[in-house]
Length: 627
Image 1 (cartoon, rainbow, N blue to C red):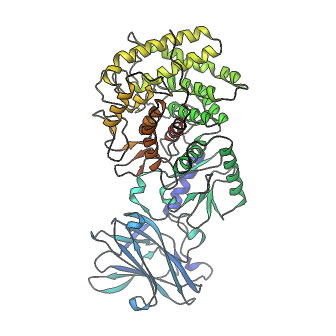
Image 2 (cartoon, one colour):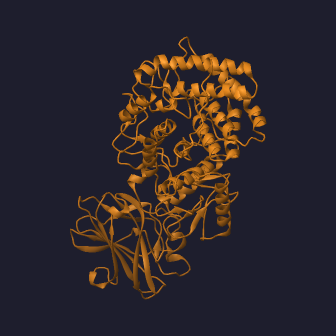
């Protein structure tokens, strides 16, 4: 698998950050030992019966403002008592204390826990950072550190509850007193993150227009984007961003000139287009979706599905939706750039690989190609053309027309005597034994789009040929899929499919029986967390894990068929699943948490199109082929 240089560097950087950064403060130029950053081992249990741990420290400062400890908890609830004592074994010598609620940390997890304290201290005097936990289910809370020998490292102690005594240990616990700069969590080391958040591989994106770096859950805790940008504000108040021309992020002071310049450029780009959605979560979600799509779009027009291994490739399907969303929000250059990349990566037979490396050099593996791209790309080209500035758009379409001709001709040539395409992997990326609606419906949209584009350019023979193919395919869908409620496959053996939404605008003019099929399918695929699964095929692998893209299909379909209330409810549910950075996930866990990769560009694009469709001006739909 070939990956971009920025991906490799970002991965290496985060791997380094997650391991440990730097060594103890004790040996640095005579500074008192007030910190130990290494935390590669879980050392002392502080939630065992009578268990506790203490760390000796001295500081050159005269006041205590906060301490941090690297903790892991197997318990979802409980309390961790943090004290600073003058005498290790004497609770009466405590000068500052705070109780940390494990549930408020997010439950079971691991990372640096920062604890605000406030007390005067005497520089150079020994103190003891004390920690003890209680958990209702008896599960352990552990203080991490290192077993590496380090000259001058401060002494660590553990309390043996059975013997009721303290003993010094060679282990060095991870801690900081008055942490500043890189000692603050979220800069070089992760903040405490619950294990439930780790089901998401990524949480957000940093980008400078050429390079991208994923923000992982451990470095998203307590952070947020500076409005209108991909600059991240950290818990310390400092900023993380990707400087122009860089391939790895840096942490800078707030209002850093380079970061401010990037923020201004990002906001200017947003202002150059249209951000759909009313003020509040809808507009905020749309703005973030646009910024994330822009970050995923490469200078050569490749559109990465997400910025994580196995997702950092360009799918014709995902990129088609992104192109349409960019076009209808006024970002013409981005929309057309995607279409040019698709033209460059089209195979000689007029089809596309299931996915392509971002440098355009071909597929990363031997997974079967998918025929649905032959529908999605012409449909996206038609959507771009309808939204593009009229000046010069005909010439730009001419440049894309060879791609359209090859794609539509291949589609027309695959239709059988019943008017249906061959079995092909659908957007599930799983084989079916008979034609599936997830391929047939996009191909119908693509043929109608190609015919209309051909008519506009005066290619009457092409238009007639593709219109005839579209009529045959439409008749085949009506004869086989419609009587069964537009299920996943033509033989009805694979259950219902959220791809029923592809039969509605802005893809196809909705058949008269589609509204009932949409309602029935949505009811069948709805899961307790409020989202839908792609389909209810008995062999489907997802259980109750719902997919934001599949759920959003219904918002787009209901908006396109004038059922505004239903569309609004689905859009609002999807937007409610944005993570703490405001990003939309690929999937949602059974208990409603973002899962897999965050953000997913395909979901961003569908939500933008759905928001546009609910704002009173229906998105255009390629006209059905005329007899």
